Length: 342
Image 1 (cartoon, rainbow, N blue to C red):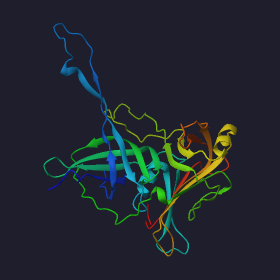
Image 2 (cartoon, rainbow, N blue to C red):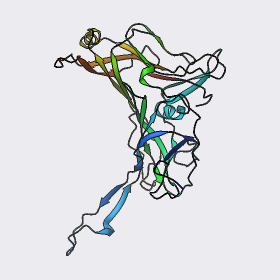
Image 3 (cartoon, rainbow, N blue to C red):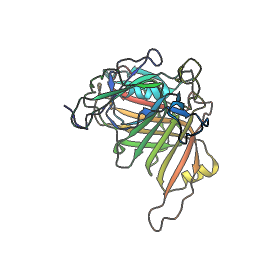
Image 4 (cartoon, helix red, strand yellow):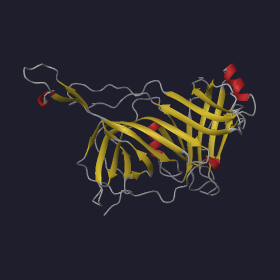
């Protein structure tokens, strides 16, 4: 018997694009919109006496699937989702920290991104058995990190899948035990100043502490192509999508207490940014779970401060991440975890 709370979402990297594997990692997601996305075309030929489009002239010309799901960021079990987003992932034992690892996620420089089998389980109203919908050849198109005041850090990922099937057996979920949530109260951010890149075993360091930031979002878009729907594929994509020129943008909301960000915007000053969330829990010998986003070079898009009718003045400042050709990569996401493997 089930309730409407018994929804599940599992995933696993595929060996062959579009060939199902049994999912064995499960996310405690908060919302999802995974669905079939078919394209139907209706024949337009005229016929005497027929005033409504005819059923025999409706054809399926393109068949794919996709959608979003959102997870709360925790220190265990989310490595596969981050690897799917960026394409490159390493997991390295931290020196002198038995049982603690740093996972480092960076943008791929090689096509294609990995593909995944994603299965969602949806219980029917009335307590019946969970029904399974399995998405094959799922590739992560983009991801959005968000950290708002008095809230949990979240990641929303958007996926393109080759197809969805309903005849694959439901895989009963099993979950990571007691993962620690990352949340706003654990966060700290540095913008500008001298910052050191992360390594395989150590997070980024340095920079100028920014004490006025109350919200942060970052979107990483792989800009995958829309091709691969070729003759012989039955209307489905016959190859993995390839990546394009990635688009990396974000926004910070800041109280206006000084002119540093205003002047950086006006002068288009290159700035490094590091956002770090540190859990007080001890893992390994003496390590703490850490989630960190490091950007070596960004440019602020504005805005200038505006009067707020007597309330504290705030700025919503968009930014664009750029490749300065000095840092090896334009963005790094690291996770200190007890997971030895991604």
